[in-house]
Amino acid sequence: MTMQRLLFLRIGIIGSLLGATLTSLQAQNTPAAVSPGAGTTVPNPQKLGLQQSIDVALQNNLTIRQSQIQLQGSELQLRQSKLNRLPNVGGFASQNFSSGFNVNPVTNAFVERSILSNNFQLNSQVTLYNGMALQNTIRQNDLLRQSNQQALGATQNNVILTVVQNYLNVLTAQEQFVVAQRQAEVSRAQLDRTQRLVNAGSVAESNLFDIRAQIANDELAIVNAQNNIDVAKVALLQAMNVPINGVVGTFEVEPIPVPDPAFDNYGATTQQVYETAQGFLPDVKAADLRVQSDALGVKVARASLQPTLTLNAGVSTIYSNFGQQRRIADGTTIQIPQTIVFNGVPQQIFLTQDGFRTEDYTFTEQLRNNMNRSVALNLQIPIYNRSQVRNRIINATLQQQNSEVAAANARLQLRQQIETAYTNLRAGANRYRATQVQVEQLDLAFKAAESRFNAGALNSTDYNIAKTNLDRARASLVQAKYDYVFRTKILDFYQNKPLTF
Image 1 (spheres, rainbow, N blue to C red):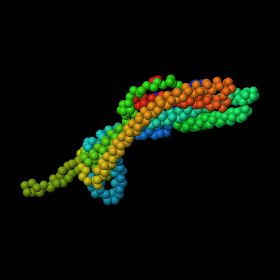
Image 2: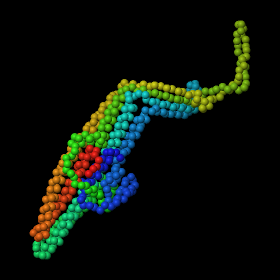
Image 3: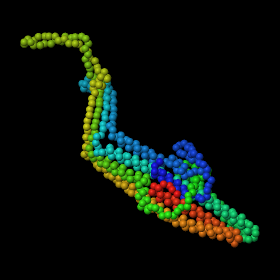
Image 4: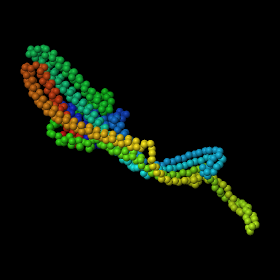
């Protein structure tokens, strides 16, 4: 697992804290995930943890699979560019038949008969020099592979953050559900108290109608909160690329409580965080590697202006059914008359020589006897090619410029994200402090209202309002607390810091 992925896993764990609630839920063991096939892992837990959600999403995400395939393609391209330095070897074989007036391919003699012939060739070629195109192509493809590898890490990070966000939405919806239940419990308790007061003649019966209406509103809020939980769970399963199949209501997500934050000044400036982050984030590294790769692409295009020197070697041979013949002595002799002039007088003599017969060379013998070997150095000098090379150089230069702009944009987005994280950190601290004060004051107000309500000096509606305001403020305090912790860990992530509390 890469360092970038580990860092995003860390920040993902902290992200879940943003929606965590102070109300403890009964945790159950998580069974192992099961796979129904088709390459998709489907969890079937009683309680789903953030780490399990991330693992399933990374395994099932189709965009990640596409990035992995693209990485494999770049690795294959790099391997092929290295193999291009080796000589290529090719073979050729043919069998021909012709009749009538022909040329014997072995003897080059004109004959008038049917000829059956074979031709065999073995050729090899290796590039000795082509303007460093082979070497620069290897370096270019290696940088492209590294860029795709970093891009895969960036894609995994995006998937992780998407899962964390949806996991957070489930926790937030669950917290809202708890708040809605509290409000309904307060309303029902008030209904009992009001009923007793009405029976005692202390308050008017119309107060019961107000309480019942409030209970109806609270029940509707509970239904809406449950619906929000279901919708958030659906989004989480979709982020994990897992079919719903009726499992939305059969699992819960695990909250992760943390201590109250300490509001110390953050130990680094935005510039310091930015300088650290751009050194290890995969998005920036992928963009920089693509710029370097495209710069080598310009050199590869310029190499086409240089001469190309190649070494060629070949071996060939032929066979013909009417090829060369050999003479073989048959054990007989023949007398051949000859006329010579001796002292001006012609005289006839007889020469004796061995008799012979003719025989065709065999297939193997012809192949061996007709063997031809060749070695050649070829120098190709480009003179004019309708400006094709010049246009390729211009196109490669434009590609490099486009990559440079993309790299600059990646750094710009990183700087803006860090600046936003800093602003959110300050805003989160201010919101938490203000909410703390709000909870303290509303708690005092509720205690006073409770005392007055028990004494019969306050109606149930005002008591319910005081209690509801306190519950909502406490829920907001929880949200503000985890929001501040999350923003802090975001900045820690940009500095490659380990997870600490």
